[in-house]
Length: 415
Image: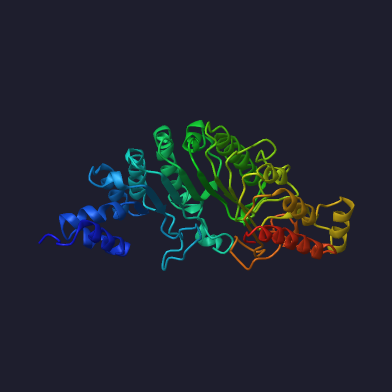
């Protein structure tokens, strides 16, 4: 029987129904189907199963529901929505997926450019939980489908699929998020064609992780890491964003959560300008080692209303023979910068900033949100994560950050 209530009232009722119940509501009648369909298919969630891949392809090919899809969100089995590793009972490597599923997902993602209303794409891949996952379960030399490359096959397949249709996707996408983008040596993956995806974006979020266990670090692995940041992040992503004719980017997030190698130093902070940038989030960057990073922030002082600095460092190198006293003397002799100069400069220059987030993190693994705390100066030993170093002016750093926060709060902001 057809509903007797006015359509406007029925829509208000449907709008209050939990998302997981919309399928049942949609099946109740033609009227409810028409009212529930736009909301039910607004965000299309995909995971690493054959059924999910088939469902994505079917939705794209359906003229009844495809026009309502505005966002596609892929989350690999074993990964949380923000990219963190989620244990899967009985499966230590949920990122290793059957080749039939990989092929099906690649085929499905090669179609998403046909979604007429698509505006947002989120890709969250699985990665080993370095350094917590034992090497025995993370790599096996004789396993061609799994092992150290097993969890790379699916990201490569999906990224290749969207790259092949990047010109058409770029006309639709306004937001792109890639969590657990692995740095590996495959220049063919990151080309000018891939850069076209960024042509009209307003929001970009990239979380870059290592493709290898820190216990396997060598010169070749570190070179791959450096080349990835210089060739892809610098040469493809930032240059593509800077070349936007409309200067449309408003939000940029670059996260380096593993801290396995030197924080990225090849990003061309000295000459990149994003004229509408209002939100910037950086994780794992070195304010001592990266030229012009502070200048990049200040250059956007007239537009940035939100600044987030997570587990960023003032870093210096420690030779194996150095004890704490020798390291402290090295810092003093080299006129090591302190956070005081950074905080005081930003407090003076960031005249429209309304939200400031500064957090430190544990020193022995990937970043995890913790209590709000000032960043500290750190030293680095070969193949060992960052460690804190206390010295006389650390209290000065804290006071300078408090002054910066006070300035933001004085204009009604949050800090």
